[in-house]
Image (cartoon, rainbow, N blue to C red; front, side):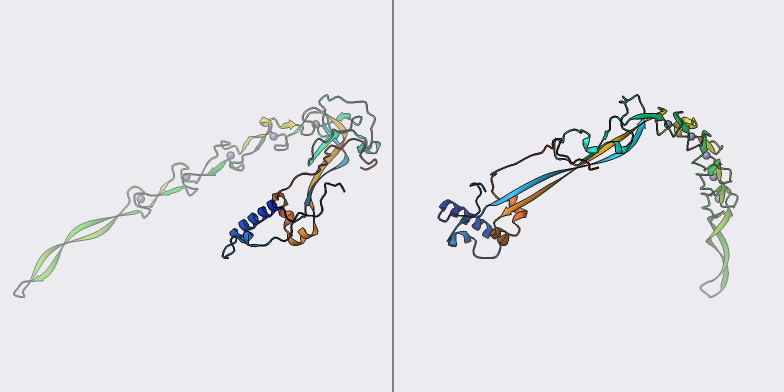
Length: 323
Ligand SMILES: [Zn+2]
Ligand SMILES: [Zn+2]
Ligand SMILES: [Zn+2]
Ligand SMILES: [Zn+2]
Ligand SMILES: [Zn+2]
């Protein structure tokens, strides 16, 4: 261990340090409510001071794993090197030179294995560049989604009932009105003799609604009473042009994307993963007295004694034969 490493050192009598401790203790004591020892730091007696330094260590580790795979993609006149690799067993993924890892990273990338590429006709479209449209099976038309092929849809005006309630009579078919009429009544004069008098009274009568002819409802003018109207989307045909590829009935081959041929190849998948571990080497007394030390050590005053950083892995460190 270098002389710079201090495990424990007595510094009793360092007045500046003692002053700083008293101040810290005062601050802490003031932060605790409901006690009379607000300046506890001034009242205690310091018998000894020891340095017991902590050594925080940050360890970054980069892991790399590789796998061998086969793939294909549309052939777009990519440069094809002479073929020398025919099977996955013909190469070792750790012999492939890949770009250096510049920084610690979590990333997965694929790399072509040069010498493995070859070109073949597309298996999906038999080198046509297109396939029959899967939506219309080549018929160029599909069932109208608006009417599901029926050609007619429920009338939006009457909700399919074919009628509207008559607003004049509120659906009763009758309209009430109040009339005043006269009637004969018998009355008595002051001598107790009866006589006949005329008296007015009001009453309610009902007439049949003239607007709806007493039916209470009116035929829907949008659908003429049958509750359905012609579908506007397909104009009653029940079919619409296939929405895929402007109704051509065929689509560009999704495998070769119209290029008719495919380039097959092997590739190495490189998965990079890193871990970042903080750890702390401290005097056992610190662990015992302040078990929360590790959670808080970044808040404590510290300075760097030594730093070793290696963030680039060079070729040649790989173990051979691991796939
Ligand atoms: Zn189609
Ligand atoms: Zn209607
Ligand atoms: Zn009416
Ligand atoms: Zn329709
Ligand atoms: Zn194809």
